[in-house]
Length: 194
Image 1 (tube, rainbow, N blue to C red):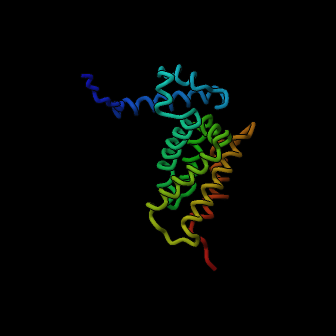
Image 2: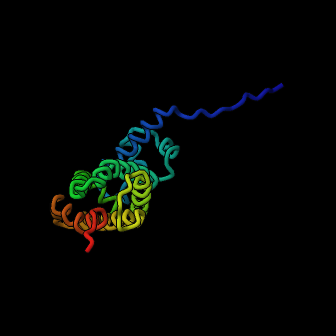
Image 3: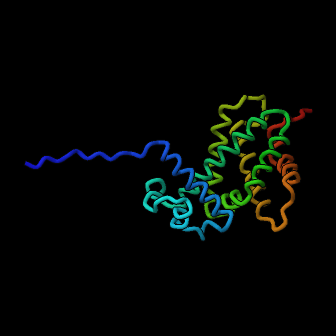
C-alpha cells in the first residue's frame, strides 16, 4: 500500500528573507547609480546580488515591485529623519536635512521622482507622511492637519523633482531655502494674526 508522505513547504527563515531582500535592494540602488531603471534587467540584478534568478521571483513579481520596496524603505528613512525636526520651530533645519539627504542619494531619488514609478513613489510618500502625522504632536494650527501634510508633501516633492531634473542644479542649501519658504514654513510656522 502506497502511503503518501505529507508535503510541507518550508518558508525560508526570516533572517535569510531579510538578507535576500536587503541584497536585492542594495544591488538595485547600485545599478540605478549606473543607469536608468528601464535599462536594468532582473537577470542583471540577481547576478550582481549573487542570488538565484528564481529566488528573485519568490520575493518580487518584477523589478518595479523591488523598486517600490526600495522606495518605501527610503521614504520611511527620510521621513523618520526629517519629521521630528519639522515639529520644532526651526522648519529650515528639517528642510535642510531633507535636501541634504536627497542630494547625498540623488541618483536614487532622481530615479524615484522622475522615473516611471514617480506616481507610485509620490503616493507612498504622502501615505507614510499622513500616517506619521497622525502620531505627531498636535499644535494649534490655522490649517487642518491632513491638508497641511498633503500640501507640504506634494509641493516638496514637486520642488525636489524640478531640482533633480536641472542640468546645473543649485546647491542643497539653496533649494532648502526655497523649499522651506514655498512649501514648509507657510504651513508649519505660526501665522501672524491681525
